[in-house]
Length: 164
Image (cartoon, rainbow, N blue to C red):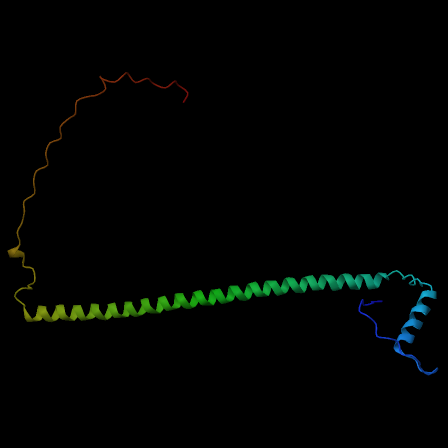
């Protein structure tokens, strides 16, 4: 038991016979413990097989539960990333679609303006007339020149052996 090194208060001079003080109780407890023998723990019985199998199943299910929890967290993170990427790509698609619509509108406006200018200035835009066409006569092809033979300058060609 813990004993402090502090000075003890003086003992009380007299106590009635039937009254127990704290100091007397502590002294009695120490005296009774000194005479007691140390008792041994009872031996444990072996664990039954069915209980061992249940403990094994419990450990396995705990591992399986942890694995499923980790895989669920990974799948959740992947889902969030996929949704974020999809949102960004959809925004790009929407902007490109708007730009395409604007370009189609501008193309129609330019065609309309071109048609209006053509209607106003009909003399500049006339249909082609075959009598006003310029015909360029075709040229006779040049005769081909033969090139000097380069066989005489090279070593004679050997024929491969028969059988190939």
